[in-house]
Length: 150
Image (cartoon, rainbow, N blue to C red; front, side, top):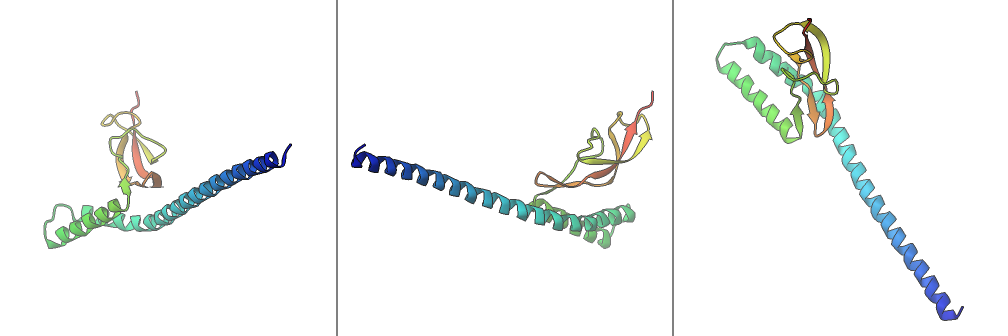
């Protein structure tokens, strides 16, 4: 093998190694960016989980006030809507429950109720709303599930 052929072979080996190292570096950079994004979402999900009980309290307060009209109720409703809008802008979505087919991935059955008002294994009543953050479950909806005996 001549000196030129040896140098060409060495050059080709070095170019191949350089290409592999560049690909490894690019993959590592992409992986780091993906892990950083996942960490941000995980941290945000933890914060959002702590905020959800506040939203629950608003819902209970609005139900308790009932049909009364007045400045207090409209003020609470405004705060509630603003809070929901802010969460929605962050990527928080409520999980549909009432009337839906029971889904153990997003619903937590608190009670089975014998009834014919709703189809078998469908959600009869939502006791506490469930939420997702992007595609991650923050908390399941606590529900009562219909059971049609017969």
